[in-house]
Image (cartoon, rainbow, N blue to C red):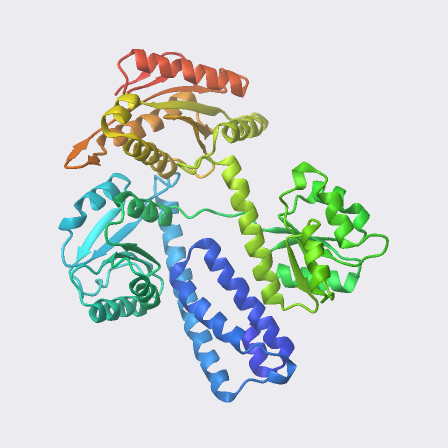
Length: 521
């Protein structure tokens, strides 16, 4: 462990290793949305970075050493607890007959009364979230999971009381994810709630669906592909140092030493970011960046320059000619990783906005077709079926005309959430346009897929959508086809679409297969 190494030999180099590993762990927790552990890890990281200094600042004082040791020990206990919890959950999932479905979690509501939140709790119940409530100030029972999701309602509480209660809840449940409700909507109150241990805050008057969306997102963490960085550096030693610093943070790297090879490397490696040395034989980093920017497909890839150049005028000129950031050598490895990750996250967010529907977060029309093409190719190789379902919300125009487009948008989101929750991670879920959705179920026949979609149809029909003082229900119709009968994606989609219209003509709120075999409602 890097901390033990520093305690035994408190050199600057060993402290750098400790800080880098701590930064890597904190970034991992951010990626995986493990908010409880993140509080402790981030606090320890900030203290370590404040002590970073240079070779003359080490070893740190005895007091700082002891404080760091206690914090590392406390974080280690939390990690061990988290691992035990995760292993128990994995065992439960593996032994469950419904292991193929995404399962919603449990939620604890802590507050004086659930009466003002009945609509919220009812909406969560439709998506499989089990709610247990406790009076404000009462601790969670001993049978509560070590990583609970807590709604903490501060309505009716004095500032000092709810802040102290929130801190106590955070201290008692280090692995919890805490959402604070009814926070006054001014900066100081939001700051106090976050500082006291809340992960998210919803001010007074927040839309119910925003809270629902946040809770469902917490129950559906997204796995992320490792970041990829291309290092263009003529010095073998320098490139190895850079790669080592990045790989400590689980970033995949590839290095080339000849900038003339950069176009081929970008095409083959497909990086999320390019780290470019400024001065190389036969070609400067600026010249290489300008060549890269001549290709439309590479226009948005972030390019970060690495150089000993300190002339601000030259740095500004380099950024104007194709670069996105400038880091001077020697670099702080923690800062290097922070810059690289922030640039890649923005780059991926941009790409995500291009490939995903902005309202639901599902794949958009074009991306859905691309995903189905890839899935069909793979399933044909593996000699298993691929089922495609087309879904359409019934009488949707009437909903928009009667209740307004914001309510219509929320119904679309509700169906998207239900589909994401009930289907497997490797299934394909896309918004095809308007109120129409496409689902690809890998390894399923038309009959199997129709049964799955029919269960979702039944559950969707039970959801009561709030509108002012009233509630209303809505349904969808669907059609299903599979690759056992149709050989191309276009044929599959067209066949499923034809089956959808059979459902529509048959009275709606039903599922039909391409063979016009209806699944009983």
